[in-house]
Length: 276
Image (cartoon, rainbow, N blue to C red):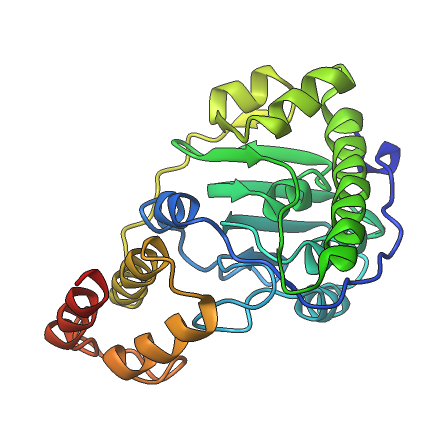
């Protein structure tokens, strides 16, 4: 199916006080998922981060996608995804940029394409699921600090976003709209085979998964700590401060020895304090 048949999503205004934070369960599935090495091919774009801002980096943004596509030019492009999703506004921008690309777009799901990353994946002319990979779709969700009037407006807004995402999934898969709404309500995880069977993807790749790097092992340890803090109900800003104190400055050079940059004893004391 050609992405030219897919709907474009109009730009939406971000509500005041909006913040997206993935659930601990989703973060855990992502951090434990298959590893994907960066590609040497200059026409390949790798999305291996949260969409938009994350704890440890600014995440993958529409600005980065626009720059990558400008660099590649009007040529076929491959987009590799292993992302928990993230900011719906950045996701809509990335989706539209890929939808407008003049040449063929091949999307390869290397680990998981969840939430915003799942509808970004739908922009592919060809969507390939890697061995053991997953696709997750659900309703839009947001953390909001506002009064009751603002919260009512945001609820209506999220319903509009859900409708736009449903349009994308419906056009790509051909499934009945009611069935897709049910899947989104249920927060549905699809295996590679299920994604192909339901026509969210075209085929399953038999390519082997590359081994983990020491950098990824370090990031996985940091992600595990973040998940534990999130399960304790610690807000994102406070988690960032606590993790920075326990593990060092986000974005600093990763040591050669996996997890050597993380003071696990300090992290354990931090978690023990939270649980007491």
